[in-house]
Length: 579
Image (cartoon, rainbow, N blue to C red; front, side, top):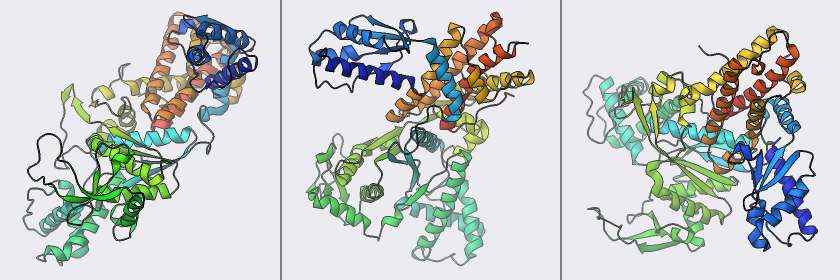
């Protein structure tokens, strides 16, 4: 049940009737007509901008449209009053029965309240993390992993068919560096001094890889030229690193549906075919790029390259796909990979990149637009940095990885649920501070604790009510719902906003909206709870009165339904009690 969507349908029906009656001209576009909570709750339960957005195209005054619309809406039994405000906004107050109906709908649906039916949306591929398989995941990967997983869950909750995908960057020079670094640890496992030259990976995490190489190959790779062992060590080390990454993702509660390999594109003709598809569209040519703006790199030289005319699809400059020596650029296999995703039939692609990949966005969107003929949109979300603190001071943990703090370090110290929730307390393109003391403190200033405290309080009153003989099943509570105080009505109205919040967050690809909503919902619950300290009639458990307790517990349980569903989207387990 989405009461905002339901009332919007009623508004659109009324506008259609006004058109038929000649009160509005034919052919108006109602797409921009919205029904949403008013900025000031004192103005009503809902507001519509219909008169404001239709006045100019209709050639009428906003108040004239608003007054005619108000008269039609007032006939709806769900709408208690429809009042014109200011230049033409229309404020609506709904009948009390609407809010008890919302609570019944939430209790009847349980954790599915606000969920759209599966299959009614699009087929969406969400590619995230996609870290180079050269070491364990670090804090930056962690934020991208949480964001991507929560976004995928949000899109699924909104009725879409979602595939979580990891693109293994195993086709570039970095995996050769991994092989050379692992080989030095292999030598170390044989008692030799490792030569960790500049440019190699120095982290201790490669010591077990060296030992595994020794266990597998004995001393057969020692003192052999690189050309004889590089490919084999590269594949072996990459496989072990991907297992480490899978284990890290599992620790965070992330499970991918698909792992795709960049290396698997080479030698298959897929890169050549993708570039040929662009060539057939007249988008590949031989040319010389203009020098980059600003100070020129010392090694820059004007040279003819094979270029993709990405400016034809919104990019700032054309992009090379083949170097002057005939080898592919990094961009070429990425083009082929995205063409593969298009061929798999997805309606929409989402890529989640680190902030350092900002310059890659337009060229990738141009390639997808060209390859799909504009049919498949690509949304790229950039993940800003995470800064670690302890006691408000920059914090450096043990760096077993050699140069960075690992995901595992953070999760083992803060916990999975705390880590996941906190990673979603900022929009993805804003930097995020992770203070180990603050994310674990028990206060209103800690969003995850505040929401979990609300969940624990709800479970506590449910247990107390059950002990006094109240049937606390959702079916029984749905029949017991009653609201007899404005503060209870305010909490019910917040619950009513949940399906709308899901819809907006999914459309905008912004899972942080879910975390924000849960914090606001928890705040409303705590406020009502605290009022009960001074007004006994507002307490959820009414000693000796099973009927009154059931009615109030129904409201608390409906809040719990939304908290459980919202935390489920975020990948966080609701707390049953606080310790």
